[in-house]
Amino acid sequence: MASTVQNTDVKQKDADRAVVVAVTSRAAFGADDGDEVYGVGVAFTLLQVKALQRVNERLLEENPAESLLFDVVLITTDSQQQQQSARIISSTRHYGLEVSRFCFSSEEDFIESLLKNNVQLFLSPDGNEVSQASQRGVLSALLNQLTASSPSEQLRVLLCGDAVILPDTSPAPASRQAAQRFSAQLGTMRRRFSVFDSPLSIVLMTSRGGRESCGRALQELRSRGVSVDEAYCLAGAPRGPILSLLQPHLLLIDVEE
Image (cartoon, rainbow, N blue to C red; front, side, top):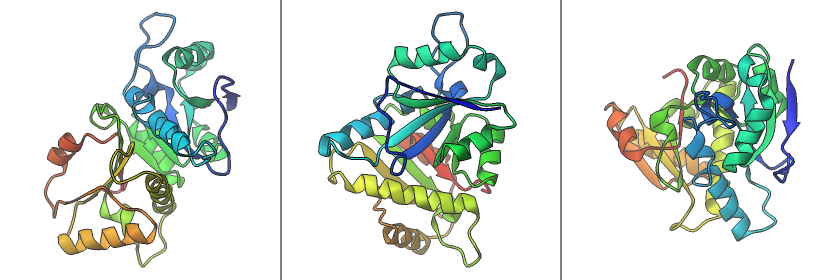
């Protein structure tokens, strides 16, 4: 059984326009140390003003009527944390996180909660949860210390994996269609800002093929209205060194890679 609690401290976003991002409470908050509020987790920097909130703030500075904003949902499947729902809510308030809704769900029902809340991107440190959500057509990304602790105040999104970006002759799986829709939304957000001093950076990295493959990926993204700030063609080289250098907040990669 799932339940959703609206955060009355936060102005609710336009349901038809907002880009809904769901983050697990285990990623937002760290281990239980007995204090009144939870410690910070791997997704804290992402949730903080340095990332998603900063993009929202800058979008509203550019246009106070802007409705294309990130809308964050905090989802809890841990039974122990669910028993401490008031503590999760108070921890969110304590850290000043811009979370619109709190969703409390069992591990069996969390996918339905994602679909019910129209989640466009699901973030979790649990690979099994990420895989389950992807199989149901919800774009998902795995959070870890490398991808979620970037010191940059600019939200850095890395589109990685040729299968996520390039079209296919066969019908695209639901997760790939979701990735294409999400990248298009990011592209629209990015166009709200100038080339310089943008709070959002979109980076392309192709793993296979040479410059031609990277060029096709760039053309495909541009056809969706997505202009990237940086592009890297690895041509089969390991991506670990580049990831360590770029330190993206969000790494969107094909789940089959």
